[in-house]
Amino acid sequence: MYKIAVLGDRDSIYGFAALGLETFPVSTPEAGAKMLKRLASGEYAVIYITEALQAKLEKEIDAYRSSETPAIIPIPGVAGNTGMGIMNVRKSVEQAVGSDIIFNENR
Image 1 (cartoon, rainbow, N blue to C red):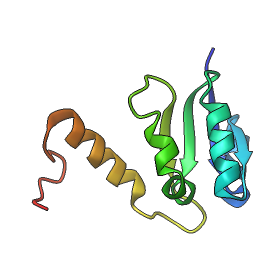
Image 2 (cartoon, one colour):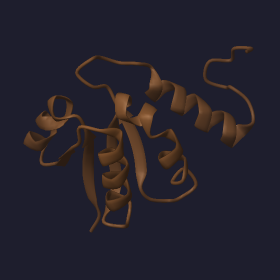
Image 3 (cartoon, one colour):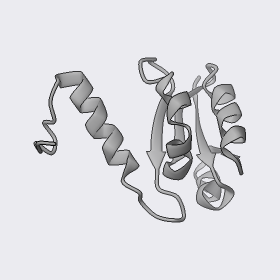
């Protein structure tokens, strides 16, 4: 059975443990990259990652975009919403259908 992980800075993710999710606090992008690789090795189907950490690990995360698992989902951290989550949704939709059908904006 697959598990769900939460990856990011301690202050942003500690509350998820109360929901029964496994939390993995990291303090540097390097530690985050190593932990992401470990979590994505097959045991975890969903990895929530703070938007701040995601922004620093885009290259590593891109390696998993075409994989069925894990689903890597950005969440706001203690600093608030940076907009990275909605930008990723937009990017995925554009890739899937060939145009921006969500916001329908010309760039």
